[in-house]
Length: 102
Image (cartoon, rainbow, N blue to C red; front, top):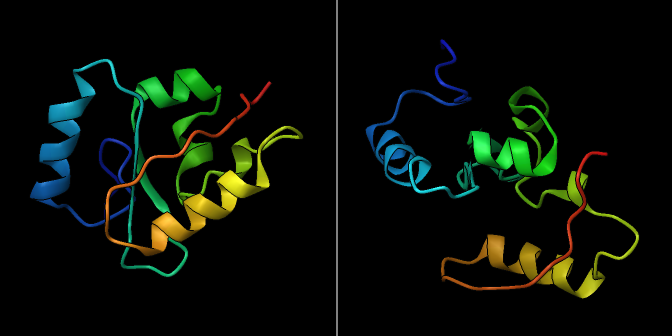
């Protein structure tokens, strides 16, 4: 399976459409594979990399919980909420403190 444009998944027209739609809107985002138990990140855009200080290679295949961005002041309640949200299928919102790489 060749890796294209930072994807770590088979070519998928739906995913490519999402990337094209949101990548040009100055948004920072990741796309994860919910069909795998660990819900790994399969794509992150350049804006997310710039925001966090991590390269795309460092982000790929990490958990979509983004535990690599947790720090001492990150709320354990917010982390638990995100874990629960990732298991569900409804849209939710939570505020959480993440840290940059540096």
